Image 1 (cartoon, rainbow, N blue to C red):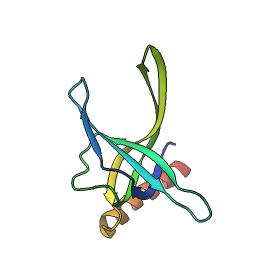
Image 2 (tube, one colour; image 1 turned 180 degrees about the horizontal axis):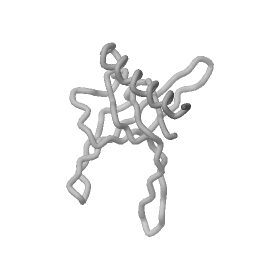
Image 3 (cartoon, rainbow, N blue to C red; image 1 turned 90 degrees about the vertical axis):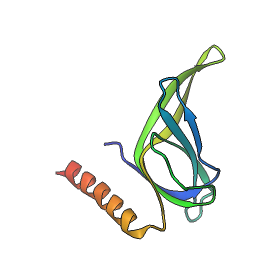
Image 4 (cartoon, rainbow, N blue to C red; image 1 turned 135 degrees about the horizontal axis):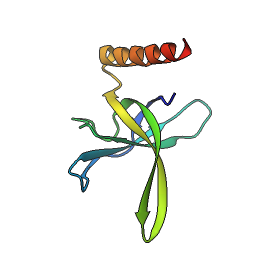
Length: 112
C-alpha cells in the first residue's frame, strides 16, 4: 500500500507547467515540522489545479510516493516526490475530515 498524508506549510508559490503531452502539472514544496526535528521539505506534484493556494498556506496533502526518471544533460536522473491526489488548505475542517476519513477507510480495507 502506498499512501502518504502530509500536513505542512507551502514553502513557495505553486508552479504550474505544461508538459509536452499538453497536460498541466503543478509543483509544490511542502515544509513539515515535528517536535524535536528540523524542518523537512517534501516535493509534491499534482495534475490538479491548487486554486488560490500560495506560499505560507498550511495544507494537507494525500497521495502516494513515486520515483520519476528523466534525462538531463545526457544522463539519467531521478527524483522522489509525492504524487498528490488531493491538496487542501488545512483550515477547511469539514473537507479535511472527509479526506482523512477516506484515507482511514482505505487503510482499514487493507488490513482486512
